[in-house]
Image 1 (cartoon, helix red, strand yellow):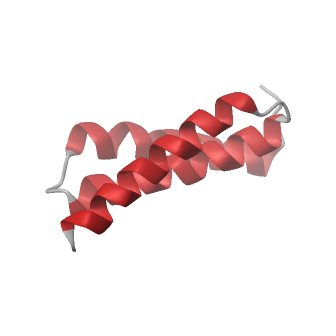
Image 2 (cartoon, one colour):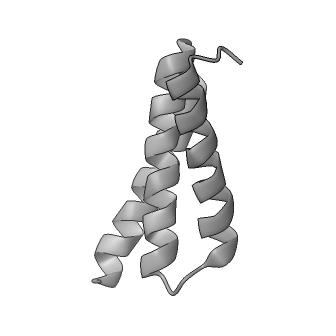
Length: 74
């Protein structure tokens, strides 16, 4: 993938993560944070398999999905 596009994906991921800290509704927080984590996983994959980026963000994404599906509040 084009390195410039990969960089934009990384910046987008950062924006989504920061935005998730601004929101108040827990469901919106989880969704926005999950989008940021997905972007970071994509960034890690296309930037040479950066496992320290891929693994934690992949796990956080799965946790967010779990909480969204089960309706957990915290």
